[in-house]
Length: 102
View 1 (cartoon, one colour):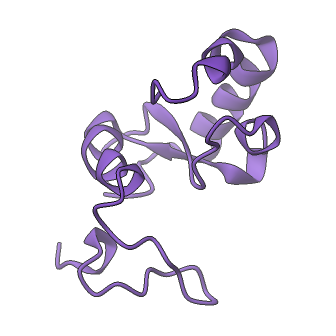
View 2 (view 1 turned 135 degrees about the vertical axis):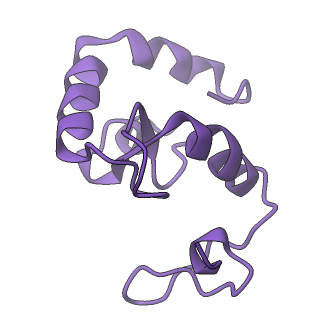
């Protein structure tokens, strides 16, 4: 979790987060990014940036493997790729990792 939002650190220890984490990992057993590795990390699709409603929004959560979370997601949150999506939810940036050949 980014150090920019220290108030959010305590939310990861709550019963509600643990419940949502379990539900999300069951719902997304495979990484929703690479679709190969098992999901081990629950990711906020829209970074919460300290917003408690976004933090606990079940619809804002997905499962990622550690590699995708620690590499791709950190690049996204640090603004190194365009995260704008079209009306179907797909990235519009042709250089976005989602649009790269696998």
